[in-house]
Length: 581
Image (cartoon, rainbow, N blue to C red; front, side, top):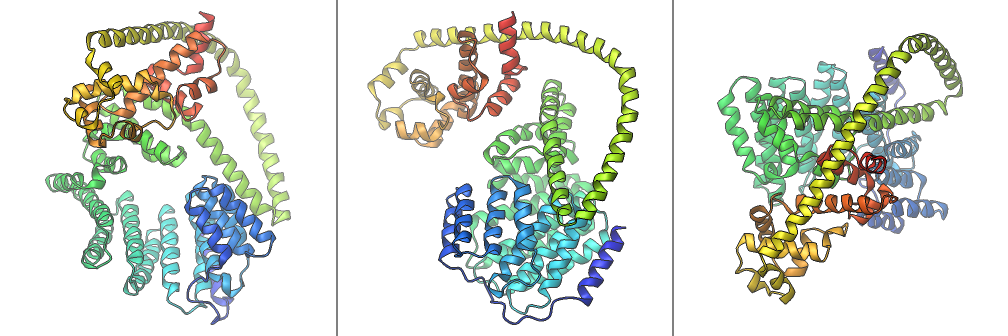
């Protein structure tokens, strides 16, 4: 069925393609209105970007195609993918756009195809990519190569997901053809970086499908292009380190799959010496090799950076991320013998799965609504079919539920009683632990007096540098706890730098050597959680939202996730247990 659809679309595009257009500008010409929207987007205020685009459309200063393209990009940055999809669909709906807006029209088409691919609307992604490839046949200017390389890559990536490897190989080779043209005409280095990104993505796609020889071909191409980039006068050392690290990691995976374990380990060690390999994202990326090499303990350690990475990028777990990241994290902890950690990851998966599934269903429903709203008859037919399926499903399910409900009720009641007792014991242990830690801190302060005097006296930077890491930690600890700096949501290393004049390296070393948690973020998180427990004990009527704000957490979700990870129960369950107990 899918092959037939693609064939029809391809034939249709060939026989009824647009006539050659010679009025298309070589590049987008930006006006004052475009500059206003773009400059706002660069500040990161994407809601204002959308508002400005709306306003400029109403006054006639910005075309509808450009406005929708800008809105689509803004919604992606806001994480509202369905709204972005709708904007790109509108911007790319006119098959004969004005010449001045042609490249925004093509950009919107590329964005639409990528989002359809990401949301697993693979049939739609293929149709969209082929349609806009056909649109570019009528254009003759250098920029065409850049857009065709993006569209062919998206097409190949979609075909790969459908396991149509021969077609995907043709599309990737076509992308590579246009990519080389982009690089040959590049004087800024931007096209070179885009090309390296494309080659890396193709290599990863082949590796994930166990197409090792094909993956090696693309890694070699990436390595060759990187060598050219390093010799150019536009090479950036950060970008070079990034792509060089990725090629090392890919070669490690290739060697591992071929059983060349010693060579794979050598490539991996080289990867870990890079700046990217040492970063949180780099450590998470390395887990693909570590899992294949059965180095589960190292993989489990590196996966510890996952939550902080997701929070730092303001990302949420979706079904794909759960499968690609959390499931390997669960397996690595289990095989490393960390059963408690594996259980925590399993609980995290259970916690985020429902919300991820709901978001996916809403996305699918909205996608169908957008399509059917333009095809009323199909919408009615779909609704009738859905109604029949629903009635049949309900009839079958009702009989099964009637048989299971009594046994389930007994099971739930027993589980509830056991959970209540478990929560009561756990809540008591949490309260006692927090109280003990508070007393222990007070005892330590009595035993060590010099750090309080140092903070009160306001040591200069030269005075601080004379202290050992352990002594410096005690000074910083008192500063944080006495002034309750940890209750500030934006508190971090920069706050201490501003207050003391110390370097970030000195502060990092102090916490690494002096604290039990080994890092400032972990230490602050401990203080906030202990403060939250005391707050809930002292003010039983306080809400979880109020507790999270008062304790310095950025949101109630972040507070709940951290509380559960540390104490093994949610703050809501803790409050209810304390009240009922």
